[in-house]
Length: 92
Image 1 (cartoon, rainbow, N blue to C red):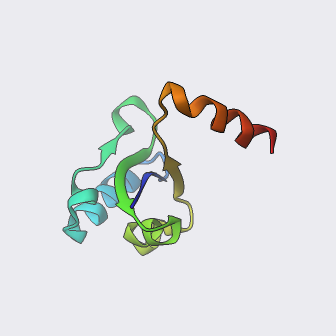
Image 2: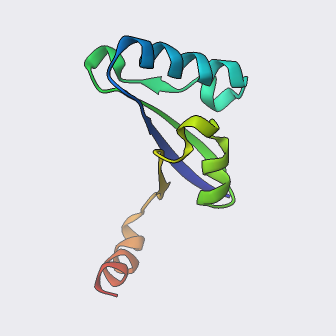
């Protein structure tokens, strides 16, 4: 399975922060209830990492009200041996 970083923004008002946190916790999903939040640093987003088959499956974990604006980023780890492949990827 692939790993994905999910970033979910919300509005900067207090009511939007509270609502987003409530919605995440109401899902009962381990990923969502353990999300990291940037609200106290005026970055109104939540982040969590999960394993999924693909980006669409990862997006499906995000509560419906936030799916459209969520950013799904595939994560990779690189060893020194992977550098040639990385260079080819950027040249292609």
